[in-house]
Image 1 (cartoon, rainbow, N blue to C red):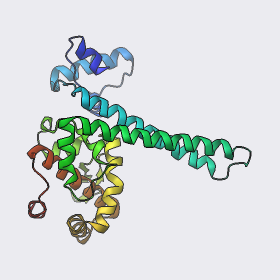
Image 2: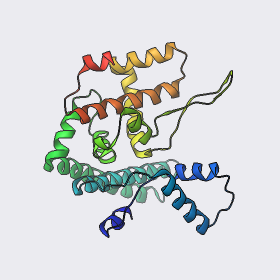
Image 3: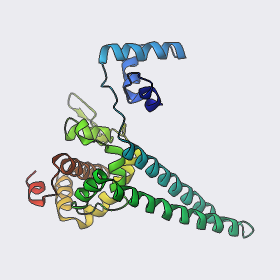
Image 4: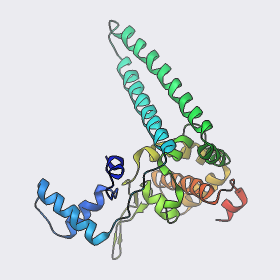
Length: 255
């Protein structure tokens, strides 16, 4: 929809709905109709002046479509596997056939993603940079390339962490201090792609393991440490892509 409007000469901003909701709460607005929502969005745009959205290049848009399709296929396969557990023998052959079809589609889509990146010089260069970061592989890198797009649109590492919903959300009032959680208001697919690699890196990557152990020594809990490891890997990827230079473990350790 955003691309359609830009193609027709309209100015477009893509804003997280949570920002509009928070803006409405700040106005103490209780009315909830299509008309009131439209007025609230207009007031938000007038007062906040959100940045205009620039569509990503066609190669990135095509990669986004392929990555989303792969994610849908993986979800469908998991649903079929769940149905297989305890399924009546009468329907098991049908489920097995569906799983075989999905396996073939997943493999074909993964191949298309690899070929698409291989055939685009810019995507190929950025993929090769991300490969220099230990632990990033074929499952995570296409998602990073598709979701981050042009990294120079992010002002700094904090903004890219916020984009992914990996910024810490603290609850504190006076002397009372509640739990710190991830905001989770950003790109869910990107967080999902970073989750399992972060757990593996905690166990096997010396850089991430040292980082996680420092947090553990400070009394941080498991989920928060995993979230911090996800954010660390995302920031490393952002730094490599923005600088255009391969991963430097010495620099990463110093930072």
